[in-house]
Length: 285
Image (cartoon, rainbow, N blue to C red; front, top):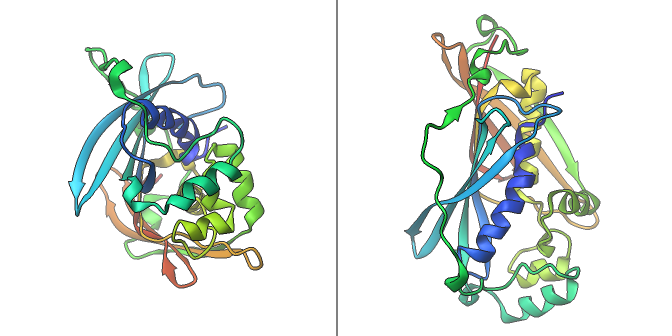
């Protein structure tokens, strides 16, 4: 049983939350902008994984801090099976309506705080990755994929369009499963206080749906080696009508030497592009 490509986002998010609470201090909240999944081998039923999280980079662009955190997933044999890169924008109190904090505090479940500046780093003790050779699994490059034959596809081929409906209940369910308690994904009043037109879908949820769309065509989620998504706009989910997300795809390039290809994945809702750029690298049979 092969895990979905974006399965690692859930444990990764839990690790990252601790990083943002104890190490990356000085921001009130964070806004996700980009995600890169590197699959060195498929994660399967029975795997036991060790997860590391590290602060990879902080870049100042257009007056905002772009922070990249990397999660590595290692199996019991000591091989890295998956690498996840998350880039967020650090948001300070200057960018937030003061009334939002009060509204969020009143709406949130107990013992969950998503709008608070991290505490002093005085008690923080830096740790570094142990020295030694990093072993990356090569199973993903050697297993026989259950994808279409390389000889049967060509550049420009399109994937069948898929429409996915989202309701508020889907967002509440995903928030519980993924541990993303941000009320902009289920509370209309708080979403509007935050400057949004309405409740929005989780960025990671739309990425997962995009990966599922592509995997339905390839027939093998384990054949993907890299999936990168840059978000451009959220999917707005109204209480009455929900949201309709249209996924489409096209083969951008093919490499005969490795029998691999790059698929462009597009996502739109209400004629707005949700993905600024999304590419999926896949091994063909």
